[in-house]
Image 1 (cartoon, helix red, strand yellow):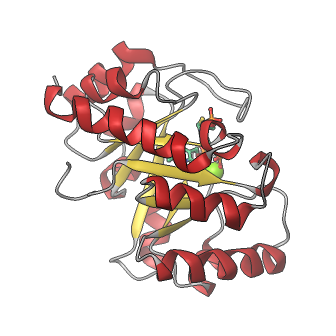
Image 2 (image 1 turned 135 degrees about the vertical axis):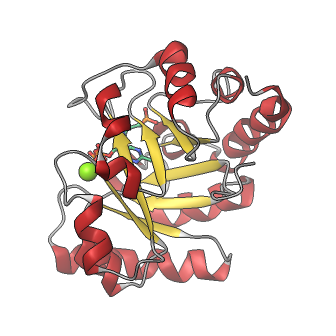
Length: 215
Ligand SMILES: Cc1ncc(COP(=O)(O)OP(=O)(O)O)c(N)n1
Ligand SMILES: Cc1ncsc1CCOP(=O)(O)O
Ligand SMILES: [Mg+2]
C-alpha cells in the first residue's frame, strides 16, 4: 500500500455508466464490496446540478468514511468540500488548483505522455492516473495506451502513487498491480455489473493477492 495513498480500489462513477441501478445504489454496493475511494465524473451536467449530485454522493461517502474526488470542476469540489479533484491536460492545471484551494486537498493528474513526468504539474500533483492502461469505450479521447510496459516505465520515473485506469477488471487487476500500479480505478466493470458488490470484491481480492509482487 502506498503511504501517501492508502486506497487500492477506486470507483469512478457517472450516472450514464450505471446500467442496472441508480448511481447512489451502485456506489453503496461498490463500497460494501471493498471500494476505498470514489470519483464523481459527470461530464455533461451544469455546475449547479453537478453540485446537487455531489452533495448526495458525499453524504454516502461520509457515512462510510471514504474520500470523494470530483472530476474536472473545482467549483463543485469546493462546494462539497471534497477530499480532492482529478484533472487532465485539458483541465485547470494542478499548479492553479494549489493556489486556489486548500493546499492539503488531494490533486490527481492524468499522465498521457512520458514527457509529463518532468513537468511542474506532475510535481505538484499528489497522485497520478495512468490514463488509459487499455483503450476503452468509456473514454475515447485518449492519447497513449500504456499497457503493462508503460506502467513499468512510469514506475521507474516516479515514486508518486500510480492509479491504473482504462478497462480494468478482476481479470487484469493482478498483473497491473504486479507491474507497479498502487491502485486500480474502474468505471464499467463495476457500474455495468449486475452484482457491483461481488465485482468489487473480486477485483479487491486480485489486488490483495498480487500487491506484494510489485516489481
Ligand atoms: C483516476 C483517473 N485517472 C484519469 C482520469 C482521466 O482524467 P482526464 O484526462 O481529465 O479525462 P476526463 O476523465 O476528464 O474525461 C480520471 N478521470 N481519473
Ligand atoms: C476516465 C478514464 N480515464 C482514462 S480511461 C477512463 C475510463 C475508464 O473506464 P472503464 O473502466 O470503463 O474502462
Ligand atoms: Mg478531465
